[in-house]
Image 1 (cartoon, rainbow, N blue to C red):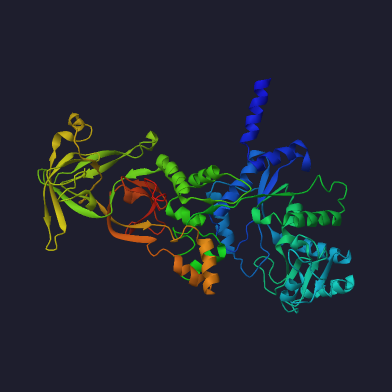
Image 2 (cartoon, rainbow, N blue to C red):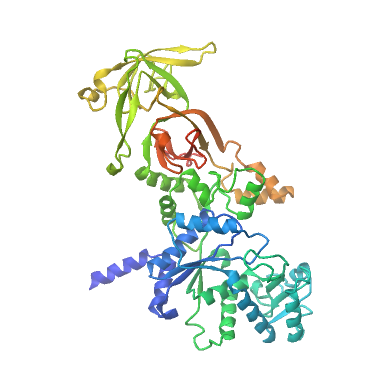
Length: 582
C-alpha cells in the first residue's frame, strides 16, 4: 500500500503543471469530465518553431487525456491574412505528426459575436466611442493613475446600437468609431479600462467577402470562440496572463447572454499560460520574418536559415527531432533563452538513427592509385545505416582514380596529422589501405593530384583488412562514377545571441525601422554555396527531403529544388556540437 502511494506521488511529480491542472479538473468533474483544446493560429504568416511548442502541447494534452483538439484560424484581421498561410499551417501541423478533429475559423462566429455585442450594448455594458485612438489611449491613464471616462460612455443604448450598426455599413470611416466594453476606467488591470470590442476596417475578408466592415478584436473573439466550440482548456503563452481576467469576464457575459447562469463556473473554458520557446541566435516575430522575406534578405519563408517549420523541414530537420527538442525543454511558467546547441543535439540524436550514410567530397582533390589496374571497377558493399540493419546496404563503385577532401592531405604533414601525406598510410572507407607516394602541383603551388599505391589484400571483408595502421579512415568517391552536386552550408542567420533584444536596442538608439536594424546584425556568412562537390551515385538517386549523413562531414538532406540534372544538398547539422564554443 505504501509502495503504491509512493509510485502515485512520483507519477504526479513527473507531470508538468498543465497536466496536473488537467487531472485536477477531471477529478473535480469540470466540463463533464471532458478535455478539449484548440490550436488557434492567425493566418498572417508561416508557422515557426515557437508554434511547434504550442502545437505539441495543444494536440498532446488532448491525446493524452482522450479528448480532442481543433484547429481554429484566428482570422479577425483581413489586412494580413491569406489562404496561402492557411494551407501552409495545415501542412506544417500534419508534417509535425498531429491531426486536428475539426477545422474552425473565428469568422464562423462573426454573426454570433455581433449579436452578442448588440446584447451588451442594450445591457449597458458596451458603447460606441467616437474619439481617436490617440485620445482613447491618453484617457486610459497609467498603472499608477486611474483613467478618465469617455464623454460617450453614458450615451443612450439605442444611440450606441444605431452607431454600431452604422460601423458595419461600409460608410463609416476607419478610426472614427469603435465599440468599447463598459467596465472600470480605474481598474488596476489596464485591460479592464473599457477595452475595444470592434473597429471599422472596410476591407473584404478572405472567407466572408464584403459582409463585414467592422471586425471584432482578439480579446473579444478568443474566449467566446473557445466557449462556443466547447473548449475546456485554453492554453496560451505567458503574455496572456494579464488577459485571463478579461477572458473570464467575457466568457461569463457570454454565458449570461446564452441564459446559462446555473453552471457558470463548472462548464466553461479555462485559460492556462506557459512559457514561449525562445531560441538563441533566432528571431521569431512573424512581422520581422515577413520583412526578411519581402526585403530579399532570405530566399523565402522556407529558406533553411529561417526558424519556420517549413524552413527547418527544407534544411533536413525531422518532425521527430523537433518534438524531441520540445520534450527536452518542457513547459514552465517563466521565460528562458534556450540554446541552439540543445536543438541541434536533438536533431543529431534523431538523424543518427534514420539518416542513410553516403560518401560526398566537398572540396575535392584527385588521388591516382598507380598500381591499381587501369579500367578496372569494383562494386563494394556499404551499409546504409549502422544504427538500423533493416535499412540494408548499397553498392559503391571503386576505381583507379578517386576524389578525397583536400584537407585530408598535407604535403608536409604536421606531427599529429593522421591523414594522407607522403609515406603515410590511410584506410579508404569500405575499400583498401593506400599509401601516398607523391603529389603534383600547379604553377601556383596548389596540389592538383596525389599519387598513391594500394594494398590489394586489405579490402574490407578480406583477412588483410585487419592490418593495423596509424592513419585514419577517409571517405572518397570514384572519379569515374561520382556525380557533381551543389552543397549549401548554413550557419546562424544572426550575429548576436539575442537578436530580438538587440534589434529593439538598435531601433531605439538610431530611430530606424526594423529592416535597417536587421541588416546591421544579420550574418553575412550564414550561407556558403559549394558548386564543385561530388557525391556517390547512390546519393544522386535520393528523393527531395531525404535524410542523409555525409560520412565524416555531417547530416544533410536533398533540397526541394534539387533535380537529377542539378543536385542540391543542404547541410542540416554537423556531426558534433559547433554552437557551444560560439
